[in-house]
Image (tube, rainbow, N blue to C red):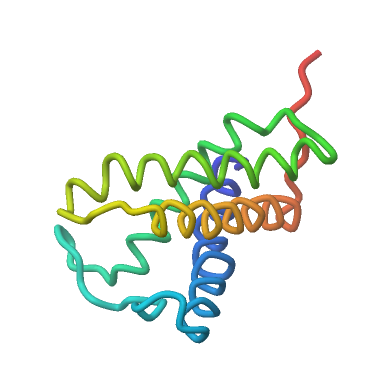
Length: 137
């Protein structure tokens, strides 16, 4: 059940926190693309934002695997830091090249900010869903 909560937290954090902040960036003219991209993406033809949220769910599981034993401020800061760094490195060094996109200083900084806020969202949803630190005896 905890892995479903972690997936759901990452999925929801993508839609609420990541895309919410992306919307604010777009409204402020900071980014040229609108949030909640509904364009179909291969191979299944699902909307891009759903694909992004799915991968956000998988990353939510990774965060729980790494940070699930932490409590208090370490839990919260860990989610922000690991949430910022992990997905951004993978996006810039793997996903962008595969899609033929250039990674610039702006995309790195934007990725760190968006993904750090997403990581905070994962932590918020994990707590809302009742997840607590894993204890080992």
